[in-house]
Image 1 (cartoon, rainbow, N blue to C red):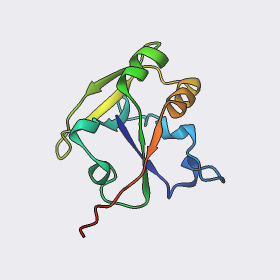
Image 2 (cartoon, rainbow, N blue to C red):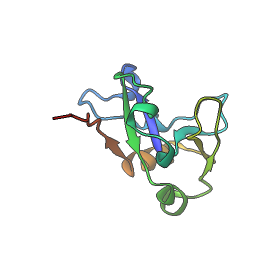
Image 3 (cartoon, helix red, strand yellow):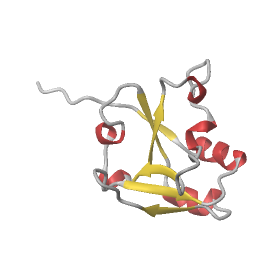
Image 4 (spheres, rainbow, N blue to C red):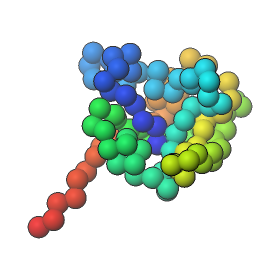
Length: 114
């Protein structure tokens, strides 16, 4: 699963440049934390080509089996994004921290034609 992080919003980034657990905050009007299914996406698609975003990767198995306690991932395609998925369940502050700890940042690697 890929989670887009708005690095231009200060609450998401600590002074040392690391990402805060707010990265896994669910918006009030959403059914879960919005993510992209990695096999149907990539860095460019998930960040909308906007360099103000950073990207985290977390394995769905870790969400279901390690963090668990009612968390699940579901594929939820929307218009314009077939990769859209959700992390659903009661996402407490503790679970946000666990999700962040289990994530890794995906760095953009540009293709260079020689």
